Image 1 (tube, rainbow, N blue to C red):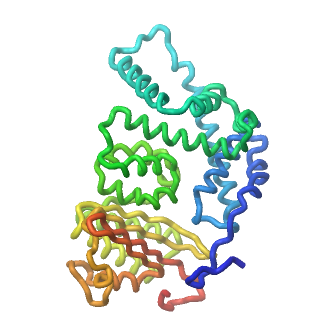
Image 2 (cartoon, rainbow, N blue to C red):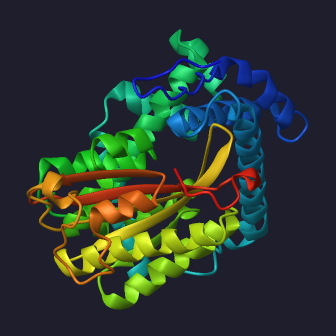
Image 3 (spheres, rainbow, N blue to C red):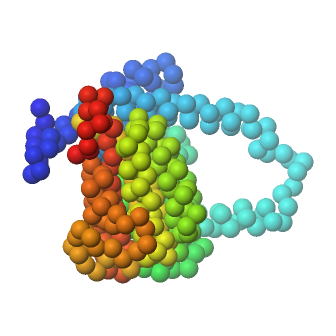
Length: 364
């Protein structure tokens, strides 16, 4: 039985990453060459670690197996695509046009400038792994380190390279925080993103909203999320539809669907009324044997000056459904409000699927 936190709820058991190694190796055995298998094992473990609090000891093995299979499938697709396109990669009879030559030259100059910012040791490590195709095991032996440590270092270097390459031809970022946020997106590190409030910053910073687009496209997990921009009345309808669709897929039905949609409408209405722009994120979640839907509504508005008053019963400032923040909180199983004056507001709410035995009993 797991430990219990301050609230009395059971804490998830710690994931033993080392115990997952033989499981992942069995998944990869016979599917990929040994040299590739070593890298895929480390990449799988890195993603398990990145998953953080979203998984525990009970779901870690299934998560690792699924991740390894996805990585194998992606590797095979990339190699098949390369094999199919290889004859077209170089045609001696075709001379690149002036525009293409300019783009190639600019890319080379930008990458050279970025590589010059790295230490000689970091450059040597990248060249050995990318150009010489040395495996993590070989690199670890050369450097007297573990393969996991070398893999983590390469991951950080690639994350930094992506950001610096994107910034090479850009003006200086408007704030010091911008580079921290971009690095968090590039690393696909959810904990780091939460610590930096990266999503909130992206909403309020036009520079990062534009520059971060290719970094966000790299995040396969993010691509699976359902996101709805919220700026006008029509977006409230789109948000409600997105939530209902995901909720049905998660097994919610009847009154649970109704109250979840009502809460989302109320919060989305607040964004349209009080903020210039916002975003709604819908996720299917599991915890302690339960499944449900978590909705995060984040805006770049002025924030709430008096959160306690806003959460008071009967308090209302808009023309929504009349639920307000306290009414929406009562409809949800979990509800959290984070706000900072001048920096926006984030509301996170979760509705859990009720077991059949619960019947029509009211939600907790």
